Image (cartoon, rainbow, N blue to C red; front, top):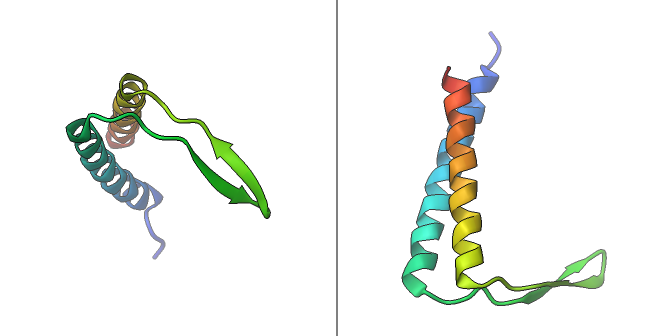
Length: 76
């Protein structure tokens, strides 16, 4: 008997939604801008620009809304 792909996807989305909401609440409580940072891609440095507090709050709330909509589409 095969595994249900919708069940696994909805479980991953629910856990991602939980993490996003926790991250959003933590960020809102800190009330600080998201700082810029540097990472490495294929051994080369890559610069990530920071975001203002308002921009990051908007981005996180939109991501939460998208995830909720995706979950609702899977249920129906």
